[in-house]
Image (cartoon, rainbow, N blue to C red):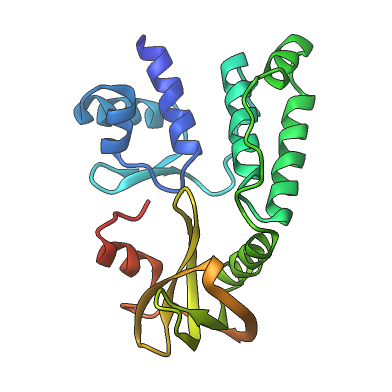
Length: 228
């Protein structure tokens, strides 16, 4: 890869993430971290407002914007594929938003690029997720975003029913089922709940705040997964 191309890709990778480490950039661009440090320093000297430093991670300064980029034919096809696959598993509201967002992107593409993307013969029939589960997913996803506590009736693997009050932290898809990662106030521990075993949900007006040992990052560390 030419150095000019590498500098361009560094800018695009940093703009697409909240915080980007040199290790991530080096892995994506197949160069050493030392090369990344040198390239970022050169970009900063050229006036590109990249904040951060070696060992900390990089991001753009607040308010900095780049003009929109045109998508290649391959990138446009990947967006169509990702949207079609996601719509089969997302809740109705998010699926509609994904379709509308894709439509806006396709509308600005050259006619040939758009036609090639829309003709992609890749589909994901949406018969795997029950409508009730999709509705549960929307309710829980919105509760996660709003940081509202939830009370639910839950049936465990043995068929035993219980009522749980939880702090919803994130929704996870495992290829066949959706689960909710949560801090369970009832059990005072992290739990994963299958959406297809949930009964009545009650979303509370109560807003919870992060507490040490009860966050999504803590859940991921306990599960052995590194937060993204």
